[in-house]
Length: 294
Image (cartoon, rainbow, N blue to C red; front, side, top):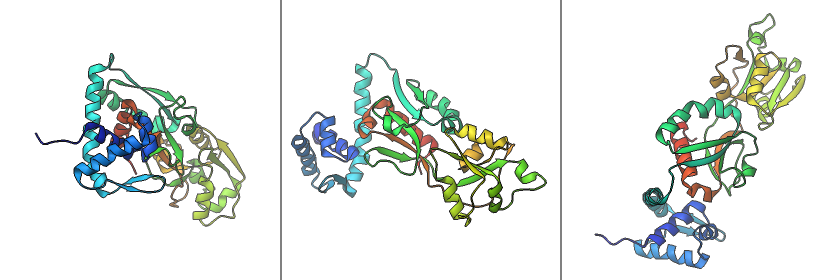
């Protein structure tokens, strides 16, 4: 059998690659930073080439490191899962997931039957209280959040890219005085989600009507209630195209054919070390595979 590098060196390499930090990887593996560095260096000597670009405060995978990680990480995960399966007293796995209610109802829950079929041992505790990023590691293992960008210290996968739609009651476009021009918003109330405060201003600038002020701006912390308010004729909701499409509500209509890229995206986020746990890794991989990453 061909000689292999020490398992400890492989484990050290994968951990540093995933965390992007010698210090964080050393803490995770209960090693000193110098000891962990020596393990990585021994792997580099074994393969005869460096796998990281060393910088002042961080280490970054080079092209050879990326290729090596692609081969070693799945194999190491399989070894870990095999050992865990043999030593665990129960097969039950639990993930504490923070997620906004509208994303949960429109995008996540329609696929949870597939998750249960593929991973019957994985169970989700769903938390819709919001502020998912601030609660990671303190009540939540992972979260699906709506944000412009994510703290680079966290692991993050962008789940979508979207457009901002002006969504109103169908009566607004089919009534006796149809709303056809953005200038008509001056007589209407605008509905904005508190997690997406810049949607209306971004849409207004792209539409070239930055000087127009609506009758009022009402803020919501529930996307589902925003859509219902729009359907009831209480205002024009500035939300994502996916929110409108997935709602599939005949009472609603898109008011203007103006294409505006949203400054917000949905993200899967967790702390880097949480991604090493089986429930988080299993759910993240399933989520990316099922719903795709942008």
